[in-house]
Amino acid sequence: MEKRITYHEQTDMQNTLKLREIVKSLPPFASDFFRAVSTTTATSTRIKYALDVRIFFQFLIRENPLYKDHSLHDFTLAELDKITALDLEEYIEYLKAYQPEGNDEYFTNGERGLKRKLSSLRSFYAYYYKHEMIQNNPTLLVDMPKLHEKEIIRLEPDEVARLLDYIESCADELTPHQKKYYEKTKYRDIAIVTLLLGTGVRVSECVGLDIEDIDFKNNGLKLTRKGGNEMIIYFGPEVEKALKDYIEVRRQIVPVSGHEHALFYSTQRKRIGVKAVENLVKKYSMKVTTAKKITPHKLRSTYGTTLYQETGDIYLVADVLGHKDVNTTKKHYAAIDDARRRSAAKAVQLREP
Image 1: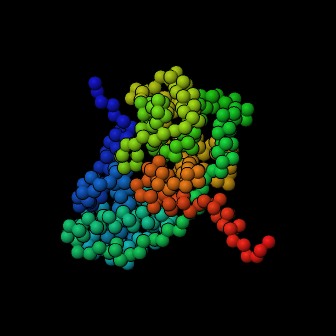
Image 2: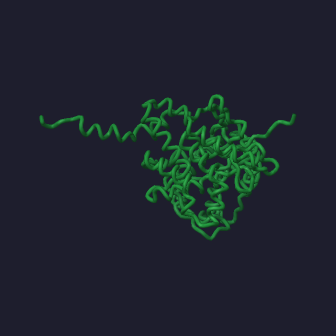
């Protein structure tokens, strides 16, 4: 019997091929770095590294007179060794507004984008410095951009209820054309949003689910988490009902060849993609709140916040959400318990009543 290729294996294969093409566009010595980190990083992470490193070399060609006649393939390790901290500070400034090669639009980077690109360059330099291929590592002389904490955006309980109610009964507000599309996707959309809100799975984990990953005997889902680890998470009655209702509809769908195992189908009868899930969450949530920009990740935040408020167990929240480091969970969820903050206002009396 031929082994079934999972969504994650297929994605990894596609990423590997994409990475090879990007690395070919970089200086020849760069392939050593990407080969070395292949056992410790995901292919998606290495693609980000490669794109970030390419932007750095393109910056040198565009902005540094020493390299104006260079192509990417002309760079050598000796020239990498000559880069100074001042060059990197100029690079950070460049990243705040720049035009990628072959693009008329300007791109920009906020705090997180700047930090990621500098982190990629640090990893790149660290490899050659550690192996004594270069004598200098200027990335260690440049401060990492400071990140300001963002308020976690999430849905309040009444907004969650209104969102699910709207998806179930919005047909009367739609045009005939919209209604025809809605009737085809209603149960799928309810199942996806209920799953995201009821389990806190990542959108990539959601679209990667196969029908065989659902165990209704134990109400469990087999997930391939970030980093490739597999784990079982459990769901409650509301998620169970939404999934079963959708699966009844799914039985009538004849999938495109190669997509037979996918749990959630697009209207093209293929495995639904991340972008499609992002679009449907945005479409429905805009009818519930216009003040908050709701994405699948915000539904994950909603679940994490609710679970923490209900249990007070930050380690449970970290485990269920698939966080490797509980400090990540603490940073995101333990600091936002508004109910406890409000109780603090009444806890201290300045005068006897």
